[in-house]
Structures are given as structure tokens and as C-alpha cells.
Length: 296
Image (cartoon, one colour):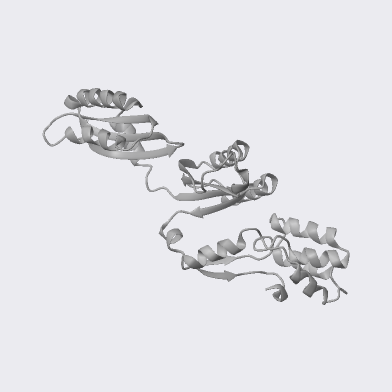
């Protein structure tokens, strides 16, 4: 009940349809007229199609009239509307879920398919995380000029705690290799938004190769070294141990080959643009690498 002794209830309002200017304002105008309290609100727009959700609390005496006026208004605007009652217990249970840890999982690739997203959301579900929202970060994709579509990226806002973070990261890394998609998994807190220093690995990050693998090819032990590198990247063996094993296989290689490798090193596509954007935004940039200082 409110302070006047009137019994109140919660109603979840869902509106979908063609987006147009003034739609949200029209809905809020009706709710404001009857003094509705907005407990939660969310809106998304996909291909000019609106999805608006509003959870309100108001006295039962006016709820019927509010729904009637909203129904008339949305019919006039050519959109669909639905109403669902929310009990006090359901609402309080929802409130008590706040405060859980939040994470951001970002996917990026040349394009993103349903198969890639399915595999990603399966991992999320298996870890007991709930998806609060999904946001497209990249620009709109042309089907007539596919050459303009050089990248696609979406962001999952997750709530909860992963059951096994190490396993989750391993599964994402395996998926990255199998499906040609990259991931970033971060704790969503104030520090994530305030970072101004970005540190990059070099091998297989800023350059599209592993320097030690290139040296191994010149030494005739490319397959052996690549196998050890792959095991290290999967976390199966310690980095220092793997590095010692790989360097030992290079014994006798003439150091002069380093100059030729450095001159033909394949820079990762988009690196120049990324560095330019980061500098424009005021970020400091550093390279942290366990590789050879010659190539730094």
C-alpha cells in the first residue's frame, strides 16, 4: 500500500513494433498522468524495430484505466503491447539478485554467425552466468557491399560468478581457434571504464606469427617448435619451461636470420588503425612480451 492507504501492484509493460519518434514519450505521458512509479526500464532497437519494457508500480484503482489508455495509444501508433502482473514476492526476489558480480564478454570477428553465438552462450550458461543484455558494437553490415564489412563485434553483459573461470577461459580460447573469433572477458567495474594504459603482447597479437616459430623454420625444426608453442598457448605447459625447450632446438642457428625475419614480419591487420584510435583517445600504449628483444 502507498502512504494514502491505497493498494498498489506491479505491472510489466512490453511494447514492440516499428520505432518512431515520440513513442516512448507518449507512453510515459500516460504513466505520468496517473503517478506511476517506474521500477525498471529498458529499450532496444533492432533494424528500426523497437522493444521497450517498463516495470511500473501504481495503485490498483488506476491500473485498469492505465492499461486501457496504453492499449488505445499503441494501437494508434501501430505497435504491439502486452501486460504481465508481477507479485510483490517476484519483485523482491528480483531486487535481491542485485549486487552480484558483473562481467563483460566481448566477441569480435570478421563476421559473427548463429553457430558462433550459440557456442558462446552455451559456455555462458554452463558457467551459471545470466545474460542481462546483448549490444552490437560494430557498425551496420552491408549485404550489397560485403567488402565494407571488415569486422563484427557484440558485447554480452553478464551477471553472477563463473563456476570455473579457468575452464571458461580455456573453452573460449579453444573456440577462438576453431571458429575464428576473439574474446575479451572482463570484470565490469569502475576500473574497467577508467583504464588509460593498454599493454599488448607481440607474438600472435600485434604480429601474425610467433617469432620463435619463424626462427625454428630457418633452423629446420619448425614442426617441433610449433607443437611446443601450441601446448604453451593452451596452458598445458609452463611458459618458461616451453621457452627453454624451444630455444634449445635453435642451437647453431646463425643470428643473421633475425634481420630478415624482422623485415618481413606480418603486422596484424588493423594494428595501425587501432594504435591511431587509442592515441587519439589519450591511451598510453606498451608492449609486454616474453619474446626476443631484437624484434621489439
